[in-house]
Image (cartoon, rainbow, N blue to C red):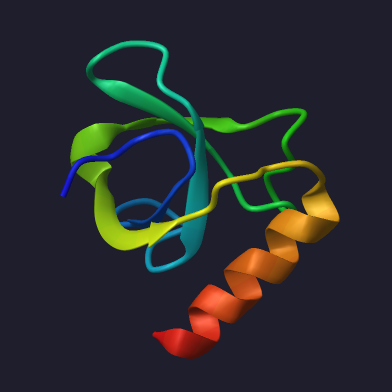
Length: 80
């Protein structure tokens, strides 16, 4: 699976291991900026190495606010 902007990913390493995030930006071929709307809001996303992210089949088309992002990820967490 290809990681793109809007993809829901699971952190495989670090203190956020196992938590879902959304890819906000891909600054280069090795890293991604991720946010979850709570600990990591859209205003200050976390830069992560792509090898530390597990891709899922879910993609969020419209990332507008932190509240909407939390809602979308909550629905994703219930599915998993």
